[in-house]
Image 1 (cartoon, helix red, strand yellow):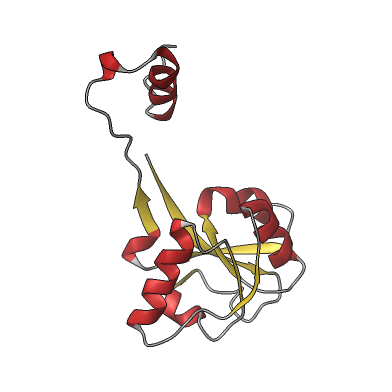
Image 2 (tube, rainbow, N blue to C red; image 1 turned 180 degrees about the vertical axis):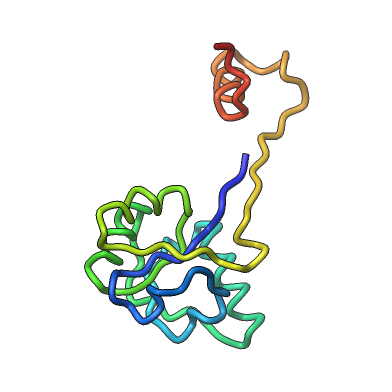
Length: 135
């Protein structure tokens, strides 16, 4: 499976009219971030460092939902999954802008030695995550 990261901004933000943006172009704005232990946080820090910058976090929140709520409250911008952004954008308070960076398109993998050797709960999880569930 995969997903795509996008930029969430509040309606009326200077970037709200953009269709696409490179992450480096967001670094002059205050961000809403996820905890430092998350993959997204590390990815953003590495990208900013490549540009000789750091991400200016106004606040760190514990979930995507909290991040969208903080963005909607006009307290910053956030890099979050595009698929979730559609839900929040439908309320009209948040705009979602695709990131043009190649790393923003992520691919996930579930790794194991043999499917048959997995315990039944693990098999069901793999089936669900890989859409192998029989109809």
